[in-house]
Image 1 (tube, rainbow, N blue to C red):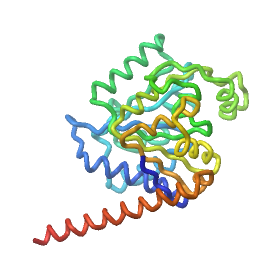
Image 2 (tube, rainbow, N blue to C red):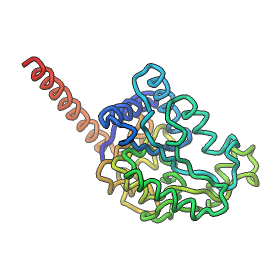
Image 3 (tube, helix red, strand yellow):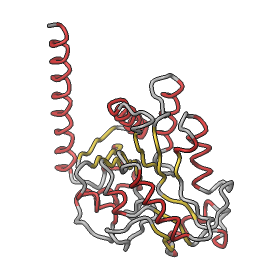
Image 4 (tube, rainbow, N blue to C red):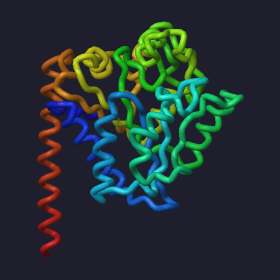
Length: 279
């Protein structure tokens, strides 16, 4: 696992957006060979989406040959409800870039057969060859998507009953009326995320520091589902300085030292490429 520590949440968003853009450019997607991107909702990716929109407007990236799969959705919430994740993606990203509507995949919590919806979602991911890059956030209790503490680390996309703590926490989005909060959701599973070629996790702010410490320094456990990503062959955790406050100083120094060496190697390769180009 790589850890990229930036000073502020704005710096994190800059890094993540540029990483996504570079991955798309390097892949050189086409209609026949699209780049497949997994996307989250919530506060964590908002600044990244804003930067991707700006890059698209500047002509630095196109999403025309990108297929997206979102992580989760509430059950029983109309798609035009301001708290639905369909509404979030439409109004915070999709309406402002050139991802074809047919390339946008979101779980539908209003279909008659929820189990079939989840099975079909996994099949869609399989049919496009899997997800190349999954972008994710991390909850204060270590959840990822709606995989709450206690979730199976071998889970696939499924119907998930939400625990009382999650429902109470989400009441603030529903006029502080707990009766209006959905009690079930559809979510990709931990194994769904682990099967992606790469996973990039965003965590910013002091309130995420405890979950970050469990993720980086704790043991793999279903009590903190995000820790399963310790097993992933290509996981990147992007933090601002505030999110590191519960990590050991030695841990922070170690990963900051690694990044310096990576930057040195990148500059060396860039110089080598320039030298070869002149020959």
